[in-house]
Amino acid sequence: MLKSWKLKEVVLMSLFSVVFGIVYLLFLHVGNIWSGFIGPIAYEWIFGIWFIVSIICMYIIRKPGAAVISETIAAAVEVLLGNAVGPRLILAGVIQGLGAEAAFAATRYRRFDIWVLMLAGVGASVFSFVYGYFMGGFTVFSTGYVLLMFGLRIVSGAMIAGVGGKAVVDGLLATGSLRGYAITRSKKGEARA
Amino acid sequence: MKSALHNMNPSVKFVLVTICMFTLAFFFNPWTPLFVWMGVIMMQLLFSRIDWKMWMLFMIPFVIMAFGYFWTTLVFAEDKSGPVVLSVWSMHITEVQLNHALSLSFRVLAFSGLSLLFALTTNPVSFILSLMQQMRLSPKIAYSILVGYQFLPVLKDEFVQIQQAHRLRGAVQEKNVFRRLLNMRKILLPMLAGAVRKAERAAFAMEARGFTGEKRKSFYTIIHVGKVDGYMVSLFMLLIVLSCTSVLYIN
Image (cartoon, rainbow over all chains, first blue to last red; front, side, top):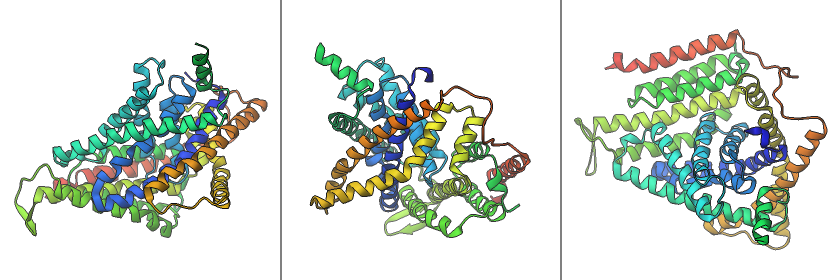
């Protein structure tokens, strides 16, 4: 699978992961302090921020695996940055990435419009919630509370990761620095058609 | 002996810590996570030379988080069976509820203890090298991660620079938290654009020096799996077995 990847694409994912690794850490601290007051639900409405890297990278690079690999790299980088959540994060990253990847795979990596990006955010939300349900021991919470958490996470995944991710990449595209990546090529193709 | 945890193979430590966490996820009694947490602290006291001040600092947010879990579980519990042990205002807290709440909070603490054990005793670079040598991570990904890691200080400087540039041009910092979050885009975009350029340059430089990303058999820095790994794995397994069976002899 990695054969078709150019080195600059892999390094790009890694550098994006570092930038977002810093953002993630920031949000982690915000979430941690919040969660002391309002419980684990504090994370749910900002959870989409953790999926954003996979959606951004897939939207730019458009190759099978871009979502999983980028999210995994982001998690690894976060661990390297001295994150106290530690190794568990890498596993969580793989699972979130798989969720986003599933949405792109379902459209056979052909469509990259806002709806598919939002779907990818939802996919990541669903996958990560199942994992969190198990690791966080959510079984002890009442059904209504769990459903509320789940709903908040899905909305957050679709809005922050899907819509937010698209906004970031579109802004980046306007700077002209993405020349040489699949996203620019496809935009040209659309113009010609 | 004081450096056993530092000398462990990072991949082995990584797998070990992950297994411990997964095992904990199956337990809903307060004792198992509590014993794991205490065991992990003991382990660090005996086999590592970590900075305990740092450890405390990292632990604070998790203690807050554990408290959040504690009261949430009490208020939004699913299973409210068992005898009532505590009554606060008009709320009756049953034994099952209290056990679950304590269990989840101790689980948060045990998870963070395990994570800190990993984070504070592992060299990031040798962790990635070990993933490549022992876990067959593709060199293309491994070295790219290391490139990103080396760029961290540069990106940090850039972050400060962009902020200062904004201030120089008279951009005021928003007081409103939500506005400030939206304004993050103004800093994020130049940083990402810079990251794209840096990635291209770094990749070009690597390829120019003959890096192909092929799997290889020999490495410059070799990360070993040694005897110390065997000892530590057995110690951890002992800790896990003891804590998991603790329910049997405590009740």
